[in-house]
Image (cartoon, rainbow, N blue to C red):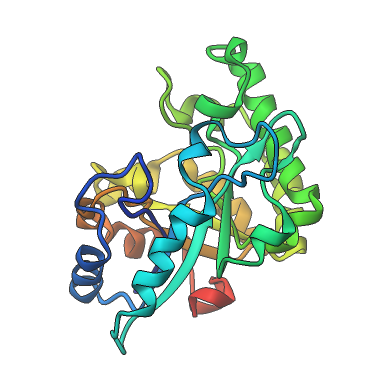
Length: 264
């Protein structure tokens, strides 16, 4: 299956992205890859929620809105652009770090449960049981939030970064029935499951087929979850491996019916 969208793209407005993360470079990549939809999801911190901003204090709406103005002045009839954001889980409130007023300003919103290097109590780092339990709780809290109706997709579920250990250690600890319980509710809520291709940068097709995430992805599909794909680009080179999205779609046997409506 050919994937023609990317709904997780950061521009240089995200302080963790570099100077090559420009709209112009992403348009060139989209034309090369045959992408017809690009969803820009710069990090966003809602300043109306005390204590929610942390790393996100550099990403208020006024900062991100620069991109919205840029997109409004671009004429690319074969590519549709979406002004979205990647917001955060608010640990003290056990909720999404967002307000309804701010949520209304975006075309789509993705929320991770796995930015644990920023949101998890530091004493949980290295304690695999507590780390897993934290991510499961965060995932459930996002689903249970009154603001979940604004969430388009769960960003890179259970896929950690910036730790001395890797995602496979934790994903392999989570039993099928736990994933099934979470993903049944994800499907029921109409929230998509993001297939984030950043993990596959150096992988061969065989590596992708044998990766621990495949079990999780298959369970999500069996539960009726719809999917979005994203590169999680923080620089223009992330699209050098985005053909892996087509490979993963074929491994999972996905069709257009398995994609979230926004992707079609």
